[in-house]
Structures are given as C-alpha cells and as structure tokens.
Amino acid sequence: MPSEIGVYGNLHSYKLYVLPTAKRLFGSYSFRRKTAIKHHANVQKMLEILALHGPLTTWGMAKVVLHDEKSGIRTKEKEYRRLLKGRKDRGKHSPGVLDVGLVVADGKNYDRAPADIYRLSLHGILYCLDVLDFTNKEIDTLAKHYSHVLPWVFGKWEYLKSIIGGDTYRLKTLANGIFLDNIQVTKMSKFPVFELLTYLSIKYQEYFEYIDEKKLADQISCWFYTHLLISSGSKSSIDDAKWKKITSDQEIKKWYYGFADEAIRFYQERFTTIKKLGRK
Image 1: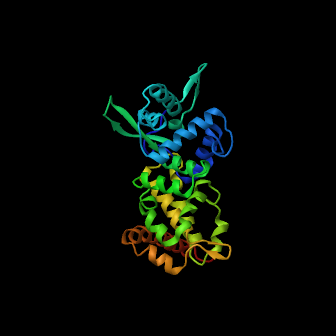
Image 2: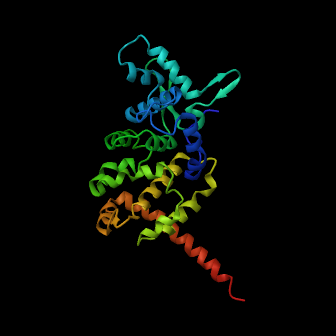
C-alpha cells in the first residue's frame, strides 16, 4: 500500500529495513558514478529531480526533463507514475518508491486536472544523501527545498554553515547509518554524547514500525546536533565557543535544551529507581 505522510518507522527502522530495501530495489551506488541497472538509474534520476527541484506532480517532473517539449511529456509522466507506484508483471507486484517510503504524496495541484504533489520523505532525503553523490552545493539546494520538512536542520542550514562550515555536511554520516547506533564513537567527546544518544534511542524505540513525521524530524535533528559534539581524531568538530554561538539562536536553544532536560529527568528517575533497590 502506498505510503502516506508519516507511514514509516524511526531511524533504527531506516537503518535495518528501509535503507537495505531501497538499495536492493533502487541501487546502492549512484548512477552518476558508474553505469547502473536501467531501473535503478531511472528511479534515482526521479529522486534527484524531487531533491533538487522540490515537490512536484508527475507532470512537473516530466517538464523538468523535457522542458517545454510537449511531445513525450505524457509518456514520461506515465513512466514516473510506474516508478512511484510500482507495477505488476505476470501477477507479481514490483514495489515503487511510494511503497518503500522514499516518497510521499503531499497535497494536490489543481492547475490542470487534480494531481498529487510528490516530495521526498525523510527516509528518501537520507537515501539521496547516502547514495546519489550530491555535491555540497546540491545539498544546499536540497536543504532549501525541504526546510519545512526538517526545520531544525535544513531550516537553520545557512545559519549553521556560517558557524561550523563544512561540518554541516556530516548529516551524510547519519544517512549511511554507520554511526547511527555506534556508541563507541561517543567516547571521543568531553560532552555527554553517550548519555544523550542513549536517551535518544530509548525515547524513540517504540516507533520502529510507525512514527509521525514531526517526531522523526526531531529524532534526526537531535542526532545531528548531538553528533556535532563528537571529536574527529585530534580535531573537534565544534568547540565551546561555536556551540555557544549555535545555541545563541533562541529557537535552537529552547528546542535542544528541552531535549537535554528530558534526558536529565529520565536519568534522575532511573537513578532513583536504582537507589531503591538497596543493598542486601
């Protein structure tokens, strides 16, 4: 059944199910890097359009490719519909990007006949960042089009770049899932990264099969900001001064420290429970 907004799981679900499934069905490397299976290349090119041009109808996607050439637009539009919704071949259904959850329908366009508007889901954004080999400039474009979907990261993108520069693009490490649940990396920081990431995992663990899009955006954003506190080798991503500058934005400060306060309350309650065990 095609995904609607929010019908996908948390980051753990993305790492264990969505990303491996998407890579198997639509490719584990970019069509830009080397020749890919035709179906993989076609899907990736469609995802690239949605990433770099924002939400579009299938007609709008076709026009991006064919511009004002009326001949061929309808054929291209039908191709995109098949890629979105999948197809049946000899009674067997091949999943489309809607089925896997990389794309969602988000609103209607009434310029012509009523038509669904499609955009990348949060999982789709992460897949694109991991697989499509976007340049930093293209990631900037993606951030601009999807600032409303990931407001604490993409909505603050230019502000964050002005403080930490290229470290903003470390979002790609989240997309490939390598450090998603690797607690060992948290030893590389003087900040309480281990405690914050452990609480983050606990907070969202019940949402493996379904999570509201806003909650998933918060989970991704908390992961991103907390990972900025991790040192990379001998180089720290951000020092105290840069962190203070980031959190001088009152919206970020209220949101992130709200998360940190939740973690404090959680650990205080757990420590109280441990103390009640007493000693035999």
